[in-house]
Length: 381
Image 1 (cartoon, one colour):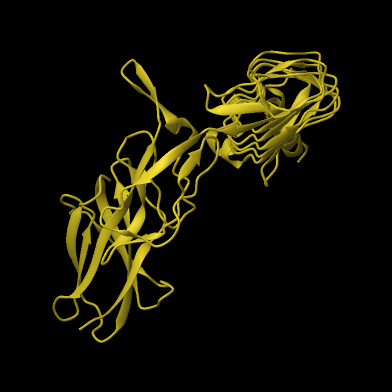
Image 2 (cartoon, helix red, strand yellow):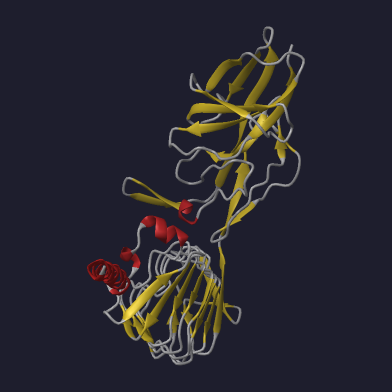
């Protein structure tokens, strides 16, 4: 019995030791971390915090929504908590004195951050590529910062400089215009606040046989998310979204979601060694013809035709149900797609009943649309 208890205690000690090593492996041996079930990553202890992102698997990084740096931590070294792309909030301690190079880069969901007045130094690229960062407040205690701490932050529209250090402003290669007291500038003086707006790019539309039913945006402002409405229609066709004839400039999404087509990286592209700036955005609606016909007894013929679009369709999926809310639906994958068009049959359906049908697509880039569209009903003969 004593021997069994001794073995159990040894195993328990081994597990505890393993967990402790995992938690301290990347933090100078004095700082530990904890990742809660609700996605809060907390660092606690004393001293300098080393780079931590490679400690976590991709799945764990996906879960992290908030990062807390505990009291007692005095410095964030190079790349400390970079690449946590889903983290929307970061809380820093009053004990922090130094923010190292690239400490917060690629925190793509981070919108705002409060830097405590204890911080005296900020390294180069500390907030680079934080796509959603809108506001940055520099502490009064700041004595030095490296040029370009907030490079490639297209949403950054306000920087408040509470320090006595003059700061450089990144204009995103001319796409953002910074002003202090109403005057254009690339430098933020001490105790001043700078505000920025993105340049506007005109949008033109080719409705491809459709008609406008409401307003469509005339411009895109760099650094913003543009929602394109589905205020167009075409007889006997389903609207699926907008696309651009010019590759790599705009993307395409399903009309059921907020349509954030135009991306921060969409306005400069490389054609060989020639780099050009996009001066105009040309968009067209993506139309699909979706037809249901009674073919023979208990059979519904489906026609899906996207041949007028440039989207490379490789598969359609159809679901059908006796209920309008599409509960208890059955689905069929339509793989025989030729020139973006397919004709298929659903057999053994109950005659006299009304069925509801919807479809979605899959493209060559292997991104399946999660939303169903084009709901139609038919009474089966």
